[in-house]
Image (cartoon, rainbow, N blue to C red; front, side):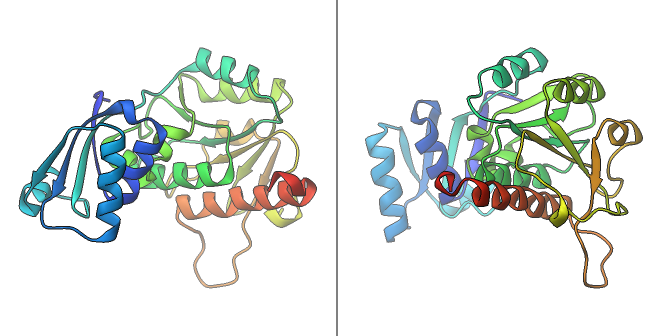
Length: 253
């Protein structure tokens, strides 16, 4: 990914500013938008001493033709993904029980961005993807994640099966999401060191990935559809884990 990522939308830009204002390269604002939300953004930009350009809405449309920019576009130095050795060091440095999300060949950047956003909200310590045949930290991912692409530690590993073996060797219990699994997620203990493993759009988990999971679980479906979108399913599973963790440790929230 290029160091320069174009972000659009008030929430995405504000999240990036709060995470690390030193990464801001340049900002373009719709000169005609003067509502309260835009004024608050202007104050944040002024405090960050970010270079701001007044622009026309049509010019912003050309910069981000496929995304609702809401009157703001930011050029931002994106966070580069980290690799296998970085993951080892990151896990070694965690103070609590690891809570990781593994995405097996999720290729749609919109889905990856939504998964990162849910991972951030659920308090995930690391998101892990294989280097091949998976979406990376593209501009779309940054925009959809609304700042989570900057805040959630993201790792691309060369061999996912080997990575999963390493997680299990650390005592991390791996729960694989599979529509046909007999065990519903709501009957599984998700309070210890845990890794949630979710498969690709349509295909689900690959055979070798399944074999490296300790248990396969499913989301009970009450309607007529057979499965959920991968980012929706990931959110459901992550927040069930967060609910169980919060029930066990009320002070942790």
